[in-house]
Image (tube, rainbow over all chains, first blue to last red; front, top):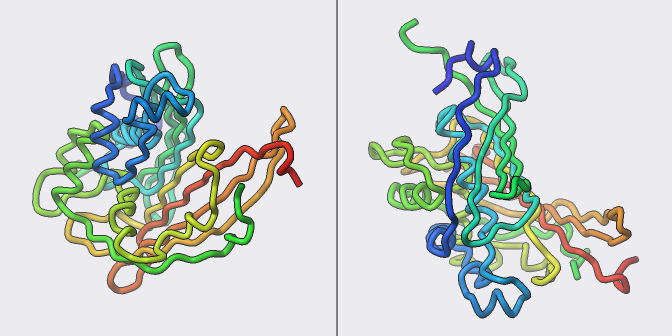
Amino acid sequence: MSAWTDLQSGLVPEPWTFGPLTRTDFVRYQGASGDMNPIHHDELFATEAGYEAPLAVGMFAAGAMNSYGTRWLGADNMRRTRMRWKAPAFPGFVLTVTGQIERTYEQDGQRRVDIALTVTDQTEAVSVLGWMSFVVPEEEGR
Amino acid sequence: MVAKSSLGAQGTVFEMDMERGKIFEFAQAVLSSDPAHCEGMHPVIPPTFLSTTLHWEKRVEGANPWSEVAMSEERGMHAEQEYIFHGPPPRAGDKLHAQARITEITDKQSRSGTVLTFVKMVTEFRDEAGKLVAESILTGVERQLPEEAS
């Protein structure tokens, strides 16, 4: 977890790349979430709908993006997360999450940080955009 | 085409338990190996975990007012999703009560002239004392066919 001074100076973690995405990734997410839309796993259904392959679940890629945010600033500290889809992803895609600090501030007597996240695919097209807010606890033992 | 009459539609309240195994399963599904989601008896939920309402709402008739929106499967999509937490996110062992309602339906014209209909559904999550702990804001968008534009 990042220290307040690191956040104030704009220090961000290394980008995180995951993939190539597989149908197994989509099916595992669908089982976990309960969204069983066949467009994400049924080859025949997806091709009849005009796609070359099953479409990645939007909430899967966005969920992974959120995992990057909580690994950085702590799952217990997260207070708000917003995600917007820009372009679909397919099996074989390799996605990269990058983060930046939007602002550090105090609210209700707590230190807070807002970050912006971007998920790009292997062609550098933007797939998902995200915004998250975290509280930043006082460092212990200092 | 989106049924404008669904504005204000409210779902039946449904229960949703935060379960340890489910939290671990969901964390793996969003590629998180963060011990915060698997260690101890009361791990915290991942940020998008409340999307698992899909499992719980099926048990209660009328829990999901989104069905009243009647958005086209071909021309509709999930455009944006937000989760707001009014304190630390829920943990395994917490019992929540959830209720969804359709809060906003707006038409916007895109630069190409296509009319896009945006629909927002807000789900409120309350603890056993009735305190608001989290909100989910789902935004769906449907591309209208030219003849449907009003």
